[in-house]
Length: 116
Image (cartoon, rainbow, N blue to C red):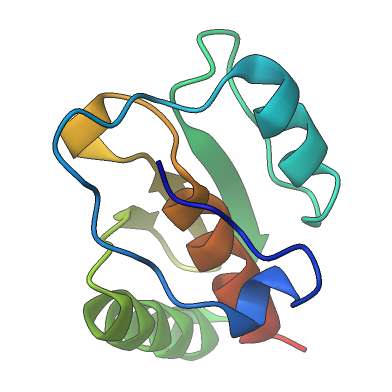
Protein backbone atom coordinates (compact mmCIF):
# COMPACT_ATOMS: atom_id res chain seq x y z
CA UNK A 1 0.00 0.00 0.00
CA UNK A 2 1.14 3.54 -0.73
CA UNK A 3 1.98 5.77 2.19
CA UNK A 4 1.23 9.47 2.02
CA UNK A 5 3.66 11.74 3.81
CA UNK A 6 1.37 13.82 6.04
CA UNK A 7 4.01 16.55 6.36
CA UNK A 8 3.89 17.35 2.63
CA UNK A 9 0.72 18.71 0.96
CA UNK A 10 -1.04 16.15 -1.24
CA UNK A 11 -0.56 18.33 -4.33
CA UNK A 12 3.22 18.19 -3.86
CA UNK A 13 3.46 14.40 -3.66
CA UNK A 14 3.95 12.12 -6.67
CA UNK A 15 1.62 9.27 -7.55
CA UNK A 16 3.30 5.92 -6.93
CA UNK A 17 3.03 2.61 -8.79
CA UNK A 18 0.47 0.24 -7.30
CA UNK A 19 2.14 -2.92 -6.09
CA UNK A 20 0.67 -6.31 -6.82
CA UNK A 21 -1.66 -7.43 -4.05
CA UNK A 22 -2.53 -3.88 -2.95
CA UNK A 23 -6.01 -3.38 -1.55
CA UNK A 24 -8.35 -0.38 -1.76
CA UNK A 25 -8.17 2.14 1.06
CA UNK A 26 -10.37 1.61 4.10
CA UNK A 27 -13.27 3.98 4.75
CA UNK A 28 -11.80 5.84 7.77
CA UNK A 29 -8.65 6.66 5.76
CA UNK A 30 -10.75 7.77 2.79
CA UNK A 31 -12.81 10.08 4.99
CA UNK A 32 -9.68 11.55 6.58
CA UNK A 33 -8.07 12.34 3.22
CA UNK A 34 -11.35 13.71 1.85
CA UNK A 35 -11.15 16.52 4.42
CA UNK A 36 -7.97 17.73 2.69
CA UNK A 37 -9.79 18.27 -0.63
CA UNK A 38 -12.24 20.95 -1.77
CA UNK A 39 -15.73 19.82 -2.84
CA UNK A 40 -14.86 16.28 -3.90
CA UNK A 41 -17.53 13.65 -3.26
CA UNK A 42 -17.44 9.94 -2.64
CA UNK A 43 -20.43 7.76 -3.58
CA UNK A 44 -21.78 5.32 -1.02
CA UNK A 45 -19.71 2.44 -2.44
CA UNK A 46 -16.44 4.31 -1.59
CA UNK A 47 -14.87 3.25 -4.90
CA UNK A 48 -14.61 6.60 -6.69
CA UNK A 49 -13.82 10.24 -6.01
CA UNK A 50 -15.88 12.74 -8.05
CA UNK A 51 -15.92 16.48 -8.63
CA UNK A 52 -17.65 18.72 -11.13
CA UNK A 53 -15.72 21.86 -12.03
CA UNK A 54 -17.65 24.89 -13.36
CA UNK A 55 -16.31 27.36 -15.93
CA UNK A 56 -17.50 30.51 -17.72
CA UNK A 57 -17.29 29.11 -21.24
CA UNK A 58 -16.21 26.27 -23.50
CA UNK A 59 -12.70 27.66 -24.03
CA UNK A 60 -11.98 27.63 -20.26
CA UNK A 61 -13.46 24.15 -19.93
CA UNK A 62 -11.33 22.70 -22.72
CA UNK A 63 -8.21 24.43 -21.39
CA UNK A 64 -8.84 22.77 -18.03
CA UNK A 65 -9.41 19.36 -19.67
CA UNK A 66 -6.11 19.73 -21.52
CA UNK A 67 -4.32 20.62 -18.29
CA UNK A 68 -5.91 17.61 -16.55
CA UNK A 69 -4.69 15.27 -19.28
CA UNK A 70 -1.17 16.68 -19.01
CA UNK A 71 -1.06 16.21 -15.21
CA UNK A 72 -2.61 12.74 -15.49
CA UNK A 73 -0.02 11.68 -18.05
CA UNK A 74 2.82 13.08 -15.95
CA UNK A 75 1.55 11.23 -12.85
CA UNK A 76 0.61 8.08 -14.82
CA UNK A 77 -2.78 8.09 -13.12
CA UNK A 78 -5.68 8.66 -15.47
CA UNK A 79 -9.16 9.91 -14.51
CA UNK A 80 -12.43 9.60 -16.34
CA UNK A 81 -13.19 13.02 -17.83
CA UNK A 82 -16.65 14.09 -18.96
CA UNK A 83 -17.18 17.67 -20.09
CA UNK A 84 -19.61 20.02 -21.79
CA UNK A 85 -19.84 23.72 -22.54
CA UNK A 86 -19.08 25.07 -19.06
CA UNK A 87 -18.41 22.11 -16.81
CA UNK A 88 -16.08 19.17 -16.42
CA UNK A 89 -16.68 16.15 -14.22
CA UNK A 90 -13.63 14.23 -13.05
CA UNK A 91 -13.99 10.71 -11.66
CA UNK A 92 -10.98 9.12 -9.99
CA UNK A 93 -10.47 5.48 -9.06
CA UNK A 94 -7.59 3.03 -9.14
CA UNK A 95 -8.60 0.30 -11.58
CA UNK A 96 -5.83 -2.07 -10.48
CA UNK A 97 -7.40 -2.38 -7.02
CA UNK A 98 -11.03 -1.69 -7.99
CA UNK A 99 -11.29 1.15 -5.51
CA UNK A 100 -9.55 4.19 -4.09
CA UNK A 101 -5.84 4.54 -3.45
CA UNK A 102 -3.73 7.42 -2.19
CA UNK A 103 -2.98 8.22 -5.85
CA UNK A 104 -6.59 9.29 -6.33
CA UNK A 105 -6.31 11.85 -3.55
CA UNK A 106 -2.92 13.07 -4.74
CA UNK A 107 -4.24 13.59 -8.27
CA UNK A 108 -7.41 15.28 -6.96
CA UNK A 109 -5.27 17.77 -5.03
CA UNK A 110 -3.11 18.43 -8.10
CA UNK A 111 -6.21 19.07 -10.21
CA UNK A 112 -7.60 21.48 -7.62
CA UNK A 113 -4.25 23.29 -7.65
CA UNK A 114 -4.63 23.94 -11.38
CA UNK A 115 -7.28 26.51 -10.50
CA UNK A 116 -5.49 28.17 -7.58
